[in-house]
Structures are given as C-alpha cells and as structure tokens.
Amino acid sequence: MAQKAESKCRVFQVNTTKPDGGYGWIILFSISLNNFILIGCMYSLGIILKEVKADFAISQKKANLLPSFNTGFMFLSGPLTSALAAQFGCRKVIMLSGLVHCSMYVISPLMPHFDLVLVSFGILGGLSYGCTFLTGFNILVDYFDKKLGIANGIAVASSGLGSFAFAPLTGYLIKSYGWKTTMYSMGSITFLCVLFAAFLKPLKNDQPSKALELENLQDKKDLVKKESAIKKFFKEIINFNLLRTNKSFACVVTSNFFVFFAYFIPFIYIPIRAQSLGIKNYAWIISVIGMANIPIRILFGLLSDREFLRAIHMNSFCLLLAAVLLFGYNYLDSFKLQIAFGIFFAVPMAGINCLPTKYIVDVAGADNFRNANGIINLFRGFGALLGPFLAGYFLKYFFSI
Image (tube, rainbow, N blue to C red; front, top):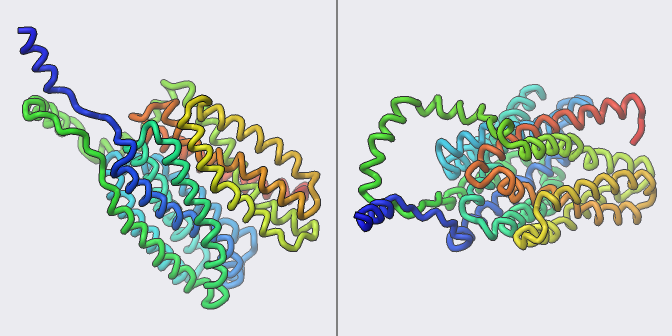
C-alpha cells in the first residue's frame, strides 16, 4: 500500500528547474538584440525632436511632450504587458507589439498635425514599445535563476550600447535625408525585433503523466466555465494584491515612483546647464554616462549573482550615490569636471537599470514576477510623466538649473 501511495505521488511531480543556460543563451541573445534596437531608437528621439519642432512650427515646451509621452506610456503599459504575457505568452506579445511599434514609425511622419503625432507615436508608440521592451525581462526570469543577475546585466548593457551606436546613425540620416525618412528607417530597423522574437521559445517543464492530465481535465473544464479568457485578462491587469499583502514590495514600488520621478531630469537639464556655462562639447557629458555604464551594468549583474550583497541593498547604495553626485554637480563649472561627473554618475545609473529584475524576484518571488514588474512599471510611468513636467515648472518660476 505504501509503495502504491508513493507511486501515485510521483505521478504529480513536475520538473520546474530553470535551465540557467542551454537555450536560455539564445533567449538572452534575442532579448539583447531587441534592447539594442529599442533603446537605441528611443534615445535617438531627442536628435529627431529638433527637426520635428521646426517642421510643425511648435514651441520647445510642446515638442518635449513627445519624448515625455513616449517614455511615460512605455512604463504605464506595465500591467497591460504583464496581463498579455500571462494570457498569450511572451513570444506572441513581443512579435505583435513589435509590429505595431515599427508601424508607428511609418505612420507618424504622415500625420498633418503634431497633436496626432502625440497620439500615434507618443501614446500608441509608447504602449507598444513597452509591450515589446518590458516583456523580454519576463522570459529571462523563466529561463534563469542562479545566473539571472548576469543575464539581466548583459541584456541591459546592450541597451546602453544601442544608445551609443544609434546616435551618430540618426544624426547622419537626418542630415542626409530629413526626419521623416529617418523615422521610416528606424521603423524598418525596429521590424527586426519581430524576427528576433521568433526565437523566444516558451520554457516547457517536463510533461506530467497521462494520469495527471486525466485527473486535472475536469478541473480545467470547470475553470473555463467559471472564468472566461477576457475576464481573466482584465483581472490580471487590475491585480494589485501584492501591494496589500507584501509590505516590502509596497516599499519598493514607492521607491521606484520617486526614482523615475527624477530619473530623466538630469539627462534633460545637464546639457542645458552645460550650454549656459559656455561648454561647447556638452553632448559628450551624456555620451560618457552612456559609454561608461555598459561594463558597469555587467559588473552589477555578476555581483548580484554572487549574493554576498543583496540586489536591493546595492540598489539603495546606488540611489544614495546618485543623490550625492547630483548635489555636488551644482559646483562643477568646467568641461573636465563635468566629464568626471559623467563617469562617476554612470555607476548609480547602471545599478538602477540593472538590478530591478533581480530584486523584484527576491522581494516578490519568481512566480509573481510578471505581476510585480507590471505594477512597478505602472508607478514608474506616473513618476516619469510628472517629474520632467514639474521640473519645467520650477525652472520657469525659479530659473535655477
């Protein structure tokens, strides 16, 4: 009898071990190429913006709404991204959203008014961009466990490389062909994300035995009757139970709101202040931050896998260091000092970008990663929309950079 009971229990065992390699490296390579393209195109938007402003004859204040909307709605897509990934799988979501995103590059230059560009590229482009970019980190968590830190570090390092590589390409295209043709070219390049996503094979655990399938068949039928796919989808979007049941996660979400409230402000106003100081090569300050944080992101990934220091603690150190450096930046008035600032500032920026996947898994658990990542990105989106807006308000009334 004991042997029969033990045998029956073994029927229900399913191997859920993550490969931490194998086909996971193909997954990582595909995600890295996607990030290289998506982030490279996003950071090139600032170069295109000047031409867009001149073509539509609008103010700088109104032109700035385009990158603000695009970035803000990218993060606000977090719950939508998580629900779509849970319902349809990461590969399908990235392929479809990538197709929509590249089409926004083609449609937006055809719009007769800037307000329509805000809708097409700012809102729809931001949402589709978020579904393409953010979903990739979900599948990394499926494939990696002990090597998740380094895998995530490589994935986000490719983003930094993209921001560095696409800037000169975008400048050349605008100078030679104009902003509209540049947008068409970016759309063509972004279409490659659809092809790379085809390699994102979902991880399948060892199949349970026929006995397990037969025993669970009736339960699955009952579940289908009780809850439709549409109802389940919307239930996933508005699932904020983690905020109520996990106090540590609630603290992390609050922290991320304030982090991304301030995150984009230095990248907007450092070049403005450098210009006001008469620094001609002000663009190099931002480029140095981008170049320097590529190897540092990989280093943070390696450190988070060693687990001698938790990812959340390293992230806290990065936030403290960023705050100290930004306070000190006000006293730097030469090109050399600002370049040195860029190198040191790359350290906390690398950690802030590299460590979240690891500490979300630590705080919320791998099984809750999709839901937790969606919630965090939603609050990041609110912060990213409000921060630059209020910074512009303070600049207008206090004129202090």
